Image (cartoon, protein in one colour):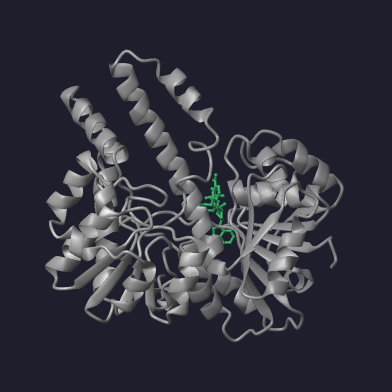
Length: 431
Ligand SMILES: NC(=O)c1ccc[n+]([C@@H]2O[C@H](COP(=O)([O-])OP(=O)(O)OC[C@H]3O[C@@H](n4cnc5c(N)ncnc54)[C@H](O)[C@@H]3O)[C@@H](O)[C@H]2O)c1
């Protein structure tokens, strides 16, 4: 693959201008295009159109080297391009939805100028767009052009450190309508440190939103915990800095896997205490207050999915709030079972760590008060669960052997520990 590519960058705002200068810096031939003539003129004069640390130098150097130019988009320029990167704005509409008018317009402008072009072209979306946009908007504008490949290549730079962020990326993500196109765009970054994650078009689009939502959530979380700590006379910085030293459970992939609702003897109880005490301090912490309602909603979605299963005899694998424990306190599985019984389902349960005659204390009283006939619902073996059910529900991570046994039964299995990819909504047009 030819490492050095001819790239056109459409839109010379923060993302486009930095991308154009940095792509030129790592060896590509770049033409920057913007409908704002001032931005084009600035680059022609080897100046940055706005302040961004290090950008002026980079533009000067690459304009002088002839690798970076700015101008209008025309057939000739497009004829020479390998990749067109779309970096136009995607602002909010008054209702919060994303405004794709700039993106649509720039695609239509490109489409008109492509009429006489014969070689393949990659159109890569660097703007932040909602999952499904590449498929519905771009693929429809370029529907008549089988030689146009669509790529999603979201940008993760931060204003203020944009050049450094581009050159030392925190994440490189590329999704493509074809693998070859995705590999070509990934190849643009081969001079940079870090591995490119090649994913599907929609996944690439979704990852960008996920990152920004997570960043916003982290800031909100730190500010709420900080405000509470401060009100309690506790040093907020020390709390957060110490919390971040735990890279096993806190700053790590732990608890970041979509699956079943949480429960147990600690998380719900401690969140309740935290939000109760903060309300006593007249401190509104909407983020922390919404965690338990969010968990309840997630549990409701799981209950709904289980109720959709055909067959009236439901076998539940797992009763404790997670695997490898017999702690039943505030187990979401118990709430699930209460709902199933309420809706007339015959429920049997198997949990490898739970025998009724071996649990006692608050553990026993919790389960007996929620499910008085628990003794009749529990099976002694997985075989018994399978033979007495029409469908199986996995509510806690099974061992490899237990999963194999359930799979071998040939029965319908709903695994609540993993969120499924729903084909129907994946195909729906979301733009
Ligand atoms: N700013 C950031 O820190 C950042 C970081 C990552 C991703 N993003 C995303 O990148 C995208 C661009 O953000 P930005 O901050 O660079 O936007 P911006 O508003 O600074 O720049 C967009 C540029 O596109 C130009 N433009 C609009 N229509 C055009 C057309 N038809 N032809 C040529 N140029 C056209 C505008 O004149 C403008 O200069 C957005 O989707 C944004 O969400 C932004």
